[in-house]
Each structure stands twice: as C-alpha cells, then as structure tokens.
Figure 1 (cartoon, rainbow, N blue to C red):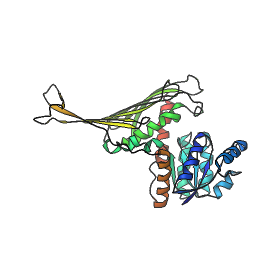
Figure 2 (figure 1 turned 90 degrees about the vertical axis):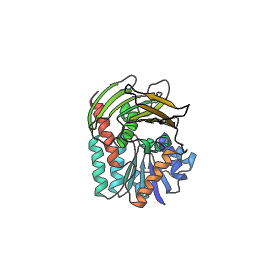
Figure 3 (figure 1 turned 180 degrees about the vertical axis):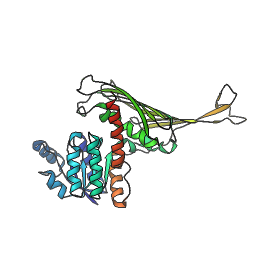
Figure 4 (figure 1 turned 135 degrees about the vertical axis):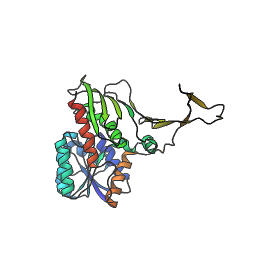
Amino acid sequence: MLKVGVLGAGHLGKIHLKLLQQSEKYELIGFYDPIFEYAQKVSNEFGYKSFNSIEELIKSVDVIDIVTPTLHHFNCAKQAIENGKHIFIEKPITTTMEEALSIMELAKKHNVMGQVGHVERFNPAFTATREFINNPMFIETHRLAEFNPRGTDVPVVLDLMIHDIDIILSVVKSKVKEVYANGVSIISETPDIANARIEFENGCIANLTSSRISMKNMRKTRFFQKDSYISVDFLEKKSEIVRMKNAPEQPDEFAMILQNAEGVKKQIYFENPKIEPNNAILDELNSFANSIENNTTPIVSLQQGTEALRVAQMIIDSF
C-alpha cells in the first residue's frame, strides 16, 4: 500500500480523506491544513492525524494529495516533488501556464508521477459511452450550477468549464485552431457566466456554456458525429446513443425511418448503455495508485491537465 497524505481539509479535502481511508490502495497517514483550530476540529471529529507542517507530512508519505485552493497548488506541488513524492493535484493544475509547465519539468527531473483531478473522466455516464465517441465534429456542453462561494477565487472557466474542456480534449484528436469567448461578472470579481466556441484543425466545433449563478444545476454534453449522436448527463449519470444506419429492405413496422431528398432511407436506433454505479473520486485516486504501481501513464496526466489549462487560458484571454 502507498502511504498518502492530504494537503487541505476543506469540503473536498475531507471527502478525499474519507475515501483514501476506505481505499485498499493507500494507507492514509494524515493531513495538513494551515488553519490550526480547524485542523484540530477535523482531527478530533474524524480521527485523522493532523500534522503541524507541510514538511513533516511530506517526509512521512509516498504520495501527496493536493486539495488546497488553486492559488496554493504550485507551491505545494513543488515542495512535494522536490522531496521525491508522487502528486495527485486537484483541477485546475495551477492558475498559470508558467506554473503548470514548471510542475511538469520538476516531475520529470525528480522522476515522480502526477495526476490531475479531472474527475468527470471517471463519471460512469461518460465511461459507459467513451468507446462510442469516435471523431465527433460538433460538441455542445452546458455546465450550470447554483451559486456557491467556494471556487469564486477563480473565473468560472477554471472553476466549472475546465471539466468540459478536459473531456473535449480527451475525445477530439486534433489541435485547437481558434477560440472565441465571452464572459460576464455578476456577483464575483471574475466572470460567473461564460460561453466559448473552440474550433479544431480537423473542423470539429465545440460550444461550451458555464454558469455558477443558475437557478438549477445541469451538467450535460452532446456529441455529434457521422451517423450518430451521443448524449451524456454527468449530473444524473445517464447516457443515450442514437445511431443512424441504412434502412433494411423490409424494416420492422415499428422502426423509425427517415428519408432524405435523394431518397436514401436511414433507420434510427436508440441505445442506453448500462451505467455501472461508482464513486468517481475514489476511482480516480485508485487509478493513480495503479499507475504508480505499474509505472504507467496516469489517465489524466500532468501534461493533459496542463493542456486543459492552456485552452482555458485561451478562453479567458479572449473575453
């Protein structure tokens, strides 16, 4: 088992602590949070060992799980890597490209592994449909959330939209050609609502909308590709695949048939992939342990996390 320590015991940090304690891949050693009174409260309530310093925790583990506010990601990662520790770092990897590239260079220099916490890659609705997504040419995403003060230290693009940026980059095998975007600040100092249009070199277009001041939550993505349409509901954990194939000579009486102007007939088929319930955060943490044990590239590598940040920064710069 890998010895692991957590930096940050806020809302998400406490979830990580709980899951790491349950995991069969890790031995949870403890955590560090700079607010002493809060750290003691968490320690007393849940029984996790609270360390007095980052240095002390880093020396005691093999893996550091960074669940601090984004502004502190770089310094925490740098310190862990320079001490030869593998890092799991929550999304976004950092707030700047310079810091993200530096983390990549440090990890390579010190021969340690890193994974970025883009948890939607492990969402069962996405994993159930991933094999069916093949060369999409139009993608539309909506990620809407009710207002929550957590995360407003960064623009909505880094808080919410970056989830969808990472998903899109994982399925579109082409370089980004152009980005057009608009963002509006409503209650925060940074944009709370954003829309972006990403054009890829292969012709694919992705249209992304994110808001953190909506009346209801929504996390949906639709992929359109030749002869099929795939819908993924990340919030409700549902997915649907609609395919079009050449209609048979004698279709079933209940078949749905479309005929174009040239007389070509297509039959529509509906499919709902089986969704296997899971805990996506536990799965991403365990997958990182597997990567370390087997010396394989993490499912969401530091490079992929950096690329998602690069595109997010392109969107922010175009506001």
